Image (cartoon, rainbow, N blue to C red):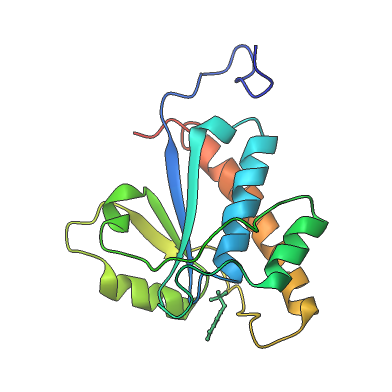
Length: 169
Ligand code: 4NP
């Protein structure tokens, strides 16, 4: 039995649950969130039941790797996000993903404008308060974003489980 198979007596994963994390540039907060959420889902034994991705509302950094400070704080915590590349949110993200999570209120407003009328994705802010943009600050900001996103990812995993495991539907 593979190490990440569902524990005996629990419902097996029936389908994937897809989550898209969105910030402004897709180089600081959202790639960190993508890496942390994927890592924590895997650690919880749910790695094969989730699809995680990230994108930015802005186009400035398309094709670029995450900010070195995000790569560093992830690496310090055993997570490798160096291979991720920034992309911009697009209309079909609203039909490809079940849940789209904005890092701050401004990202949420931008996403509400981009959202097609028939979009099926649930759209909301990731946390009750903004995950602050660390781009113009120092390393402390990245450490703080890391902790916020890790706590939020653990809560999200609990929430998705409570909804009926990672079986979408
Ligand atoms: P992010 O941070 O939205 O967390 O990726 C930013 C990255 C770049 C810029 C702003 C925020 N920028 O203005 O280039």
